Length: 302
Length: 257
Ligand SMILES: Nc1ncnc2c1ncn2[C@@H]1O[C@H](COP(=O)(O)OP(=O)(O)OP(=O)(O)O)[C@@H](O)[C@H]1O
Ligand SMILES: [Mg+2]
Image (cartoon, rainbow over all chains, first blue to last red; front, side, top):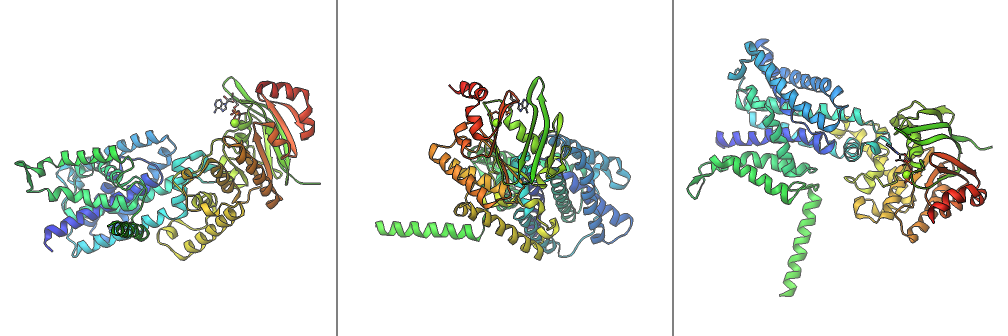
């Protein structure tokens, strides 16, 4: 495979990782945040700065970066998750901007807006990132089909009813928020390793918004839907490169195409392409059965 | 003789200028069915909300099995064995019937987030146990055939029964049913009364509190009746006494006609 293809695969994987984090937070527990890219930023900067200035191995600083993000998420969520959901979403934007400013303020170490590029090269990165992606999807899937997943879906629909079954809504939300932020942190490190340069602009609120959009596009409550849309929509613009329609270069219209797609889906399928359904073996079998029975019926008519 | 499970003393609750509950006292014994009746806005649901701690009382005390729960939170109270249904069914729309029942056991699921995410052995074991208990409860209440259905695809009468199953699965000490017959057709109401009797038979220790709008329904179901009007208890007693109480007939039946 060419380097370009490998790079596309990594791009898709990183998108899947970050959207998985947002899935556990928004789709399961109903917390809407526009600040998840900040956790990518925190962990990426910590990981690569520590690796450079303290000369520590990258795997060790990655672990530090991920847990530090989790700790920050804990500190941020303790007061804010007591607030109403809309205030929580607003505060998440502020938090994201705050992290960007801190990165710029620490310009002596982070190289501010120019970007930090002292990132070591890792051999076989694509396999590592693929492995991590599979692991994260597996973990989030298991989360969904566990008692935590059920309690999350319950509290998302009706917090008062959830409490009357002994569910500690606040604690559960904090836990899920921390997990989601640590997943974002993993995505941030992968992003740095792939791009070999990180800058505060790369992790601003528009990236957080993009994760939410990819999630809603794929299906508000469907993990497989989100994974497919995260990977597909992220690499789609690359395929538009060099394609011409009526003399226009589609690549330069990618934002327009992106938004049109999203408007169409949100209008016609308010719950995203896959809605709540998951793609799994049982569902595939069901579809296959329907197909074959439809075919046999059609055959009889003839 | 029998043990007192729930004891409420001089409960008061007002919302702004509205005194929704004034000086409400009541005791419920093990295995007893107690009904609270009264016209719209009498404060019946507010009493349930005070017991399940959705609201904290302004004054008065609550005790569950001899333990004071006046200052306990909604979550603690639920975990101590106070279970309820809601006036407008509040099943979790995103979960199927089985998961709706399982979720009532999940706060005490006994496996950690990490065990869940990595599918460790304890997760399988506990999950199996939860499923078994939930299915047992559904079977007991003849709801097993709906296990995999989403609540929104079920008739209202069945939804109400699923809500009762969800409230029962954790083996509570007190079960509170808020107008379980509301929105049901006469046929379904008939089945519901049988259903509550069945539960009473199968869980002999359980104390049941029922709110009901219509008197006829509670007369042959309950052991004891409290009649509320504008937040006050205007009568209390055995069904036979209530039926002939002139105050009740005036306040209650007068309103209906
Ligand atoms: N959260 C609240 N805020 C303000 N007022 C409330 C609140 N909850 C109840 N009330 C008021 O308290 C009074 C009693 O309400 P409650 O719902 O307990 O009556 P109810 O007996 O259950 O009536 P219904 O038969 O209609 O269910 C009503 O006047 C209602 O408007
Ligand atoms: Mg009511």
